[in-house]
Amino acid sequence: MMLSCLCASAQETYRFAERDTCALYMDIFRPDSTAQTTYKGVAKPAIMFVFGGGFVSGKRSDDAARQWFRTLNADGYTVVAIDYRLGMKGFKVGKGLRGALKALDRFVLSQEIGVEDVFSAVSYLAAHPELNVPANNLVISGSSAGAIISLACAHAIANGQTTGLPAGFNFKGVMSFAGGIVSKKGAPKFPKTPCPLLLFHGTDDKIVAYKHFGLPRKGLWGSSYFAKRLKKQGCNYSIWRFDGFGHEVAGYMSALWSIEKVFLEKNVMQGIPCEVDAMVNDTSLPNWRIWSKAKVNDLYKSSN
Image (tube, rainbow, N blue to C red):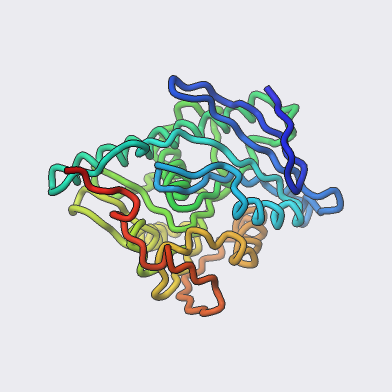
């Protein structure tokens, strides 16, 4: 099913899945007509974007995201912005340890259904080659909750959990803006080498943990943890740590385009294992005070 929508660049909207609670759609933004869609003879991947919002809010193509989409389109990249079910919507976080453990269960569920919905979007593209978005040439990118889902997709594939995906599928890369993985089974591991990963994270992020938040074997593991593990495994990855920054890094897609471009061209398209571990202190970056000091309780109000 295709719907026409008005926006700054050419857009198509397709329904890619039907769930009990809702229908899920994707928007496809095509490259500019004058843009180069290859790099050194290699077709540029499409960027699948997974929005943020704490699993309670957000939408696939808001104004801030579209600004970034235009940058990608101008450089020859197709963008596929997708829906996913909001697993924390309507959930009240209870008080004390019991409330925290119930919230963890709900976070894990939210992450899992997000992964399921991403895999459905990939399968839809694979089943519809006429859309001219090859499913075997996708980079997944996410902001905040979307970054959690994106990293969880890479983790699931590395652990052989590929139900709903075309046979042999893997993403060409992951770009994570303030992401992590929620787990009740200990720190996440990658038995198989994952696709190239690009990690952006503020060291003072109080919403998505930079290192780890929770109990020793339960909680959320963030970008710093993954960088340490990926380095030990000799993986193709880069991490950019923003010294003293909070959760505002989740919205830095446009601001960090020059770094993303290098990752896409070298780590992804050329397959060069260009490992980067950088600490950044750049006062010219946007300072969104509402996010710089934000905490988890600001998103999920405790119940009585």
